[in-house]
Image 1 (cartoon, rainbow, N blue to C red):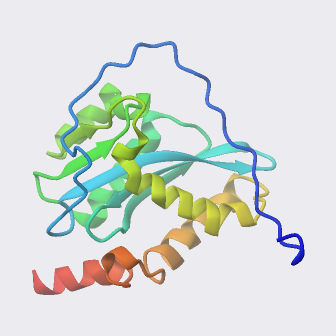
Image 2: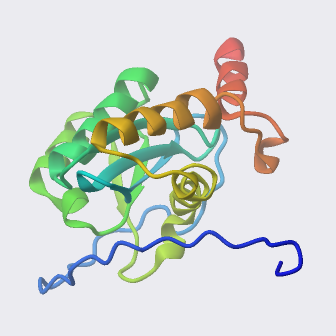
Length: 202
């Protein structure tokens, strides 16, 4: 790397304040079984942090379908609230119209365990599943997407403000990740191609 004058990309990481609240363990229905038979059977969701120059840290909540690897819903905001994750789930439900026995797996973050989010999940007829405390591997697939987002998009630019970051994230997810980026785990196809195939044969 020295000879070729190549440098690795390093960025300041977000350091969340440690919570003093006692974490109550909730049901883990997924149990690291990421296998699926079709779309809208198992979704995983999480929040990640996007830095901007003027507006500081912004927050992306994403919902991923484990079968197609498609980001079926997301929301971007300047604040990390229950409304952020509710909006991401609403967008996913609106676009996908999932069946009633869908499993949604998340970590034990306060946004996902809030009464507002739980009520919305129950209203949609979705089963909630939670990672064990301190076990990121329980939600490895959505963690992997956010790592791809950072490596292929976020770490290569510096967003002026919230609006600039929001546009870039939209272009990455809708213009590249879902429709053009192939994945070895789904036979070197795109997430949208997998979903389209299933909908045509349904």
